[in-house]
Amino acid sequence: MQWFSSPWFRRKPASLLILELDGDDGGRLHRKLGPLSLIALGVGATIGSGLYVSTGIVARDVAGPSIMLSFLIAAIGCGFAALCYSELASMVPVAGSAYTYAYATMGELLAWIIGWDLILEYAVGSCFVANGWSGYFDSMLRNLFGVQLDPRLLRSPWDFADDGFFLNRVTLPGGVEAIAWFNLPAVLITAILTIVLVVGIRESAGLNAAMVLLNIGVIMTLIGAGAAYVDPKNWTPFLHEDHGWRGVAMGAAKIFIAYIGFDSISTHAEEARNPRRDMPIGILGALVVCTTLYVATAAVLTGMIPYLQLDVTAPLAAALQAKGLTFAGTLITLGILAGMTSSLLVGNLSQSRVLLAMARDGLLPIKFFGAVHRRFGTPWKSTLLVGFAVALGGAFAPLNLLAELVSIGTLFAFVVVSASVWILRITDPDLPRAFRTPFVPFVSTMGVLVNGGLMFWLGKDNWIRLLAWLAIGLVVYLTYSRRHSLLNRTPEAVASSPSPPPA
Image 1 (cartoon, rainbow, N blue to C red):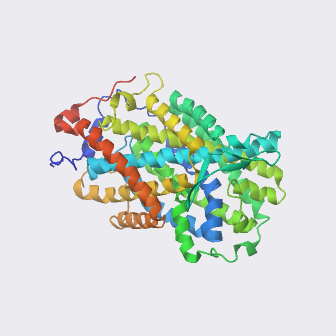
Image 2: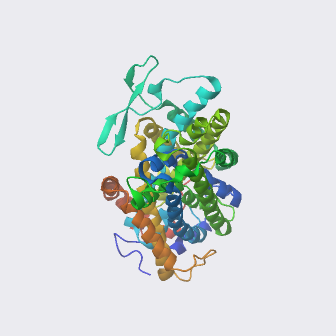
Image 3: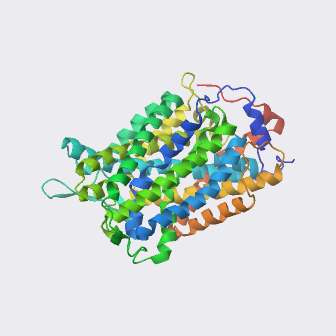
């Protein structure tokens, strides 16, 4: 196969990726994750601001009670993509996720575009979670300890709406209005989790698993406590009064951020103990758990409070407190903090693994992004950089703008992964596949159509932002990555190239 012949679409074959797994493990990540840890990573990354913040925004502004259908439609698109992720992750169990799969199927240029898109998905997604985390942290301090933080330290100095950016004004004690400074809690939680991530994958996975158990328990508490206060009249009309059925599709596209997470499991394939068996279990298991909890929670939330009256900063806690369940609301706030902390941890964890994979291929500076700590076995330099970037974005970036940027980036990655399965079936039909996506090309085609279709419901402004981000990435590729790519060498040199030494 003449995979090296085209300078723009040269591919790194899946067979070569598999061969590298059996080679020298210097600079490789430690394999310490089992199937339950992988499911916990997926659930931990998925159930975060998408449920605890975006649900209120989308229900009030776009979908109304039909947000339940929006969650199901988004889950169907995710289901097609999840099946495709499962085949690729079990077949090519190395760090990199959609970037690695695109490199093996569609060539280096598109692989770079996807890798650059994954930076948007994970890093911006973590900024979104860190930004939303502070609202619940402030609620916990007020309810448990009676501590009121300075409102200027809880928000970005500006926000975003359909008509553009505007200054974020807050009310100080005494009724005085002021412009917000920056989101201090977002900076602090990001710094703490960055230290945990540098220390090691086992410690990170253990902390994540504990928070996931607490998070699921809290969600079940919400469903049980809130169900007693559900009034079916709040589900009528079922569709949003302004958007109707169009709001269901718009809601599915906007709520898609709630499903960012299950795909992050694939970035940890290199750290799975038995990736060919465990990766499909982790990916599909996380998606099933999250979808069930999402639909049930949306039903209870919109049944408790008329959707136009939902609090968009902390909708679940506010709904319980409005029914007089102050103590339950405080418990929910604690669980939500745990869930969002877990989501932030896994998002930063996944981002550093994507950067590591790109560095190994020469598309990013290997000495920095490819450095693996000798003692901890983690890509520590890229982890520190990701932590700094997320802290900066969480402190200053507008919450609404971040949500839609993450959704369109995630959908784009799902489209590429869905197409990659079909392409590999044609170009490399004899590669061993521990898990085979059923009904290909139907599942692959539907993954492309459903996820691609949802992208168009996000509006032209989000497309402009995505294209602008990709244009910046293209400049980086042309000025640095294309010249430093390992595929500029002969195929034999690439195959024999050792992994970067630990640092």
